[in-house]
Amino acid sequence: MVDTTAVASLVEAASSGDEHAWNELVERYAPLVMSVIRRYRLRDKDAEDVSQTVWLRLVEHLGSIREPRALPMWIITTTRNECLRTLRADQHTRPFDPIDGIETLDLADRAELDEDLLRAERHQALRDGLLELPEQQRALLLLLVADPPVSYAEISRRLGMPVGSIGPTRARCLDKLRATPAVLAYLDGTTWEDTGGDRHDVAALG
Amino acid sequence: MTSLHWDDDERLLEELRDALREAPQVPERVLSAARGAFAWRTVDEDLELASLVYDSFVDEGMLVRGAPGEAPRTLAFSTGELSVEIEVTREGIIGQLVPPGRGDVVLVTRDGPVASAVADEVGCFALPRSGGEPVRLRCSCEAGRLETAWLQL
Image 1 (cartoon, helix red, strand yellow):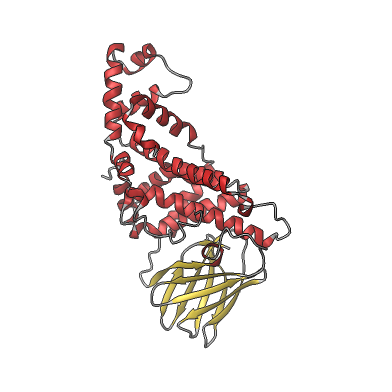
Image 2 (cartoon, chains in turn cyan, green):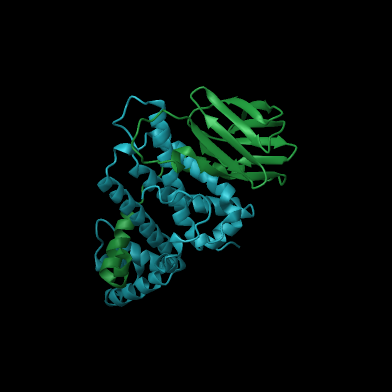
């Protein structure tokens, strides 16, 4: 059986032909791809083409991923590059519209984009970590951050847990979250190194 | 680095809340296309993947101000031994196999091959260009067979 909680085993299974594992990767990272694309404000058709290019790239890249934990960063970098290419191509086909596109971004905008991408990576690490927790712990954390908020009484009822133990359990679950492979990998900073693949222009945003 | 604050329970929960709120809903159409990408896993062992090693849109002053539309986009893909270099204009794709030599080149979309061309004795070929959808080239010549990374033109 494939351990569906760990990115590493999903990548390994998918690269040896397990379509179920691939679908899991898609479920997990499609929101990340979309959240990066959204920041470049592409038209719907372009956004879908970028998304599809990223997934096709990942299919061919599966076998050469050396550090699966760096996958979120690989996805962010690849998506960003494809967005930039699309914006650039757009300018070439519509040269009389100088207002549009990346070149109108001033330095502050670019810094903000960089900050956005870093936040996307950070948030993905937390979502991945959450998926790597046992069901009960994940359920508690999800209730604790629910929007609108859920009262301790309601949490106690839903999880069959005494109100008095929610606080201590919460602390334990957060410790577990900090110790998940996804969060540890992120804190390790491994994600900025060795993403393999399409990062030769990683400095494009300077 | 914001993550330094993750040792604080409240701040970690707060960021987890943001992380969940910010994950966009992905349209089913996009998800299903992404799942479908798996069908493109290369199973042909002889077909080597040529990765994108140069893209003038990215490698040459992506963010440099200047009149766009001046120079055509040039791209290079390589397997290490065999390369294909292309120039994309509004009219189409002009390319060359390196090392130069005769061969066959096919333009492939997700729907399969859409155009093909014969490379002449110096490896030159011409193909029409497609819309913004992802495409790749499949080349075979004496030096070997390759398939380029997917890319949008």
